[in-house]
Amino acid sequence: MSFVQIDNLHVHYGNTRAVRGVTFDIPRGEVFGFIGPNGAGKSTTIKVLATLIAPNRGKVTIGGINVPENPMQIRRMIGYMPDFFGAYEDLSAAEYLHFYAAAYQVPRRQRDQTIADVLKLVDLQEKFSAPVDSLSRGMKQRLSLARVLLHDPDLLLLDEPASGLDPRARIEIRELLKALKEMGKTIVISSHILHELAQFCTRIGIIEAGKMVTEGSLQDIYRNLGLLQMVHVQVLNLTDDLVKQIELIRGLASVERQTDRLAIRLRAEELEAEDLLDAMYRLGCRIRMFQPEAMDMETAFMKLTEGKTA
Ligand SMILES: Nc1ncnc2c1ncn2[C@@H]1O[C@H](COP(=O)(O)OP(=O)(O)OP(=O)(O)O)[C@@H](O)[C@H]1O
Image (cartoon, rainbow, N blue to C red; front, side, top):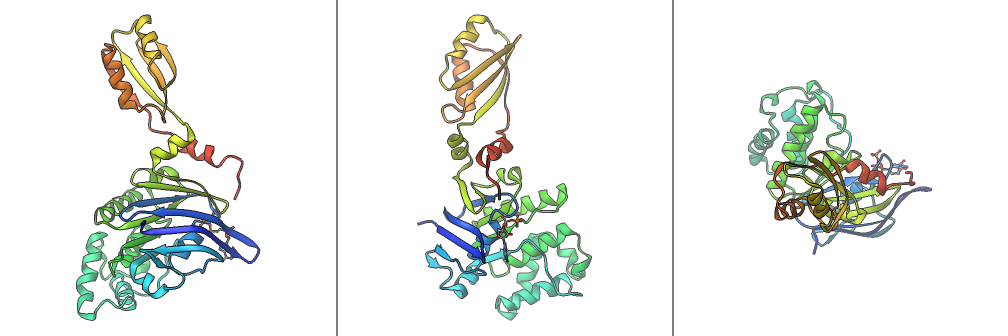
């Protein structure tokens, strides 16, 4: 059974139907990228998992436990990072973490060590005594992450943790999330930027106007969309005859030639770039360059959400 299960979730705010029949599962240890434009329903779904909003309809469980019926039990299992950073004025980083450690009932004699550990993990040891207000946005995001780790939860719910960060701070957050993934945490992370998540998520769910558009591994999503992958190849011994043989390889959508270079489009659901390379070697190609283009996430996203508005 999957660690997180959401089945036919509906959430209304008055007349606004923010979430309209969302269903997905996340196995333990996976990093689930939850993607959609502003207003699609990401924050609302995450707040239901965080026990902050009760669903109007649908079943939501974490570790087999019904979320809306057992909020206290669930809160011990999750670390929720909202899409805004809030702190009382004049607190230092350490005081901020002590406040939350107390709220999470971390035993008093363990708190100093736990706080030192989480500050080390997010690389903010030198900011121990610094006022929270003096930290950069990237540091505040890292401090927020430190906070959600205090009680060592199994599931992290991170609502747009990289939004508004400069490229360097984004990379720092990404590296931190990779470390958390390696520690075996199950992570839900939302973003409206697709490529931000593609590199380290093991599963992706795309939500639009309160409904899931698609869900699965990246490869599954490309397959379902019937997307083409472009590969550029330089073949030193290219002849018309060899091009004809290459064109017969199964799974190719098109082959274009310019002198000794080929631009080949693959049907991602039939043939992977590695299989093309094998097949070309078998035909006797002397290959100097073989360069698959990165899968075009933006195209995938536009194709998936065509004609729908939030
Ligand atoms: N407290 C609220 N009261 C009324 N409507 C709300 C409330 N919170 C969200 N909504 C509406 O519900 C819909 C979904 O919002 P939600 O915040 O879940 O989207 P989101 O995908 O997280 O977007 P964002 O990236 O902007 O945070 C939107 O139409 C939003 O205006």
